[in-house]
Every structure is written in C-alpha cells, then in structure tokens.
Image 1 (cartoon, rainbow, N blue to C red):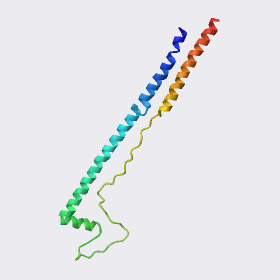
Image 2: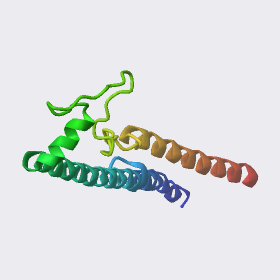
Image 3: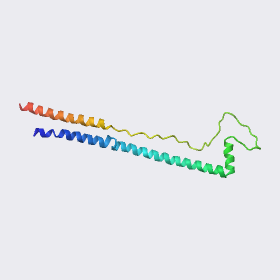
Image 4: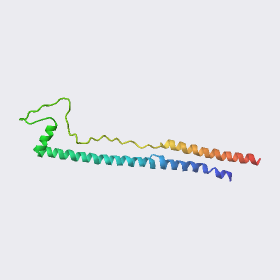
Length: 146
C-alpha cells in the first residue's frame, strides 16, 4: 500500500508541468496577454498613421488644386512672390508644417515566457521534493514503529 503512494510522484510532475506550461509557457495565458496588448498598440499606431496619411493627402490635394494654399505654404517656407520684398531674420528656423504631429516608430517586443526546458526542470524538482517527502514520511513511520 505504501508503494502505491509513490505513483503520485510522476503525476505531480505532469501536473506542475501542465500548470506552468498553461500559464507561463510559450503559448500560455501570460504570453497571450502580452501579444494581445502588442496587437492593440499596433492597431492604435496604424489608426494614427492612417490619420496622418489622410492629412498629408488632403494637404497634397490642396497644394495641387488651390493656388492660395500653395501661396500660404510657400510663405511658411520663407518664399515670396516675385513682386514682394521682405526682410528675413536669420537664425529662427523655418516652420514646416508645425501643426502635423510626428509619430514614433513602434517596435513589437517578443513576449516574456519561461522556456520549456525551465518548466521541465521546475516540474522535475517539484517531483523530487514530493518523492523525498514521501521517503521521509516512510522513514519516520518505520522508525516510530520499531
């Protein structure tokens, strides 16, 4: 009957391996949550880039078809008409589309997870601890009975 208890050792190894793989493994819930957050960030970044692209497209269309918009944009860059004279103050820089937001490049990061080898080592160590516990209990019960 005592030997039947030792069947619990491999089952405990499988149980710990399964739990750690399901939570902290490569396809576990922790890694999946990280990937879902990355996907949400990428979708938000894509939406922001689409809005910027639309704004650039509208600016391009207005510069192609509207002479007044082209004149205003040229004045922002520091150009004037052929019949104008103006004084340029040096060192202040040129205002190039100051109203356009600039986005940063978004790099996707790989999810943090425990490698399968580490999970196997944890499961085996736990199984060995259970085995040592059972051996100690048998040894103590043998010692008390004698």
